[in-house]
Image (cartoon, rainbow, N blue to C red; front, side, top):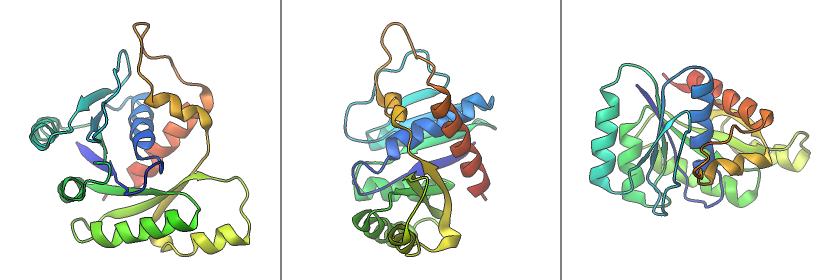
Length: 199
């Protein structure tokens, strides 16, 4: 089973949403998908989603579930990084096949992403950036920010789709509500991008 972790030190960069999107995109392609929630906050109550969600906030839980899932021959495993817990993120980075650092086109976002890359690349040689909420058109200022990221390390750009935040909501007793088309398309795109970034 291939594994990808979305890790960042900056809140609101989109790591949780991207982990959900990757699993959703895999599921819509008929690929078995599993998400490990390692952030300190309480995981959502998932009911009827086309992918599995595991509470892996404790190190022992993370190791147990990760190793169990790795026994499967196929599928994809998305890890929602530890929410600025450096030792936890270090263990995750050492373990997964791909580390993805989400960043927006904002000076602080870019700086934090580059700093985090410098740290995580010591533990995994497949650490990449993804531009999240990429605007449809960019000006010279945005291009200057983008140029600070080594082009060969940027695996893709995902547009802003407001409805993606619904993936972080609990599924009530009625179960998982299929997202709108633009969310599903974004999920498929992220799955394709991630698949191409695996080595």
